[in-house]
Image (cartoon, rainbow, N blue to C red; front, side, top):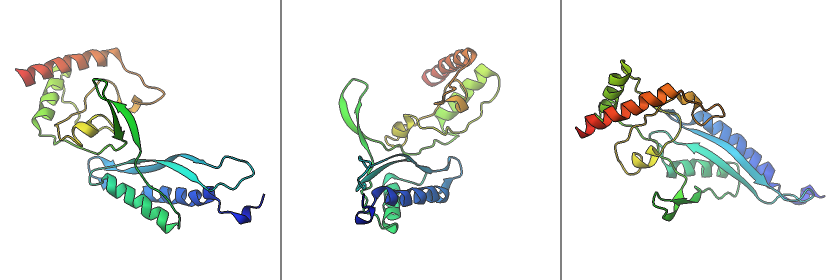
Length: 199
């Protein structure tokens, strides 16, 4: 009832939201993977219609590209908040996860960018297997979405490739779909790859 007596945390967060949008346009790009990104996707503040909110929480989706890391991403958001004169706590979310054998653990929502050289033997083996099955050389490119390769390659340093049936434009969308012929061809390529790698 007396907004002049309080500091509205949602108004302050609105300034940060505009800063996040501007930051997104300035993020660095990798020649192969492209530009990192940052978006504000969830915001929550206030709990009463007649009370000035003293806290506002925002959840950002920060996609890293090569050359970027967790510490730098956290630092750039903290600096943005400081420039806006905000008292902010910037942190990477932890979550409960389970290992493949059911072991419970805490994990961080950090997915490092990674690549593997086109001339790497694993890349060449899967390209040759695909060419054998499909009758033409496959395109070697990158996916715009995250995979478990963020851990296997990005953290553990295990040579990793992404390969699967279907079209990337349909992956993780409301129109997700796959042609059965693509599934059949992928199964043949997996078998051919196993023969090439295991002899």
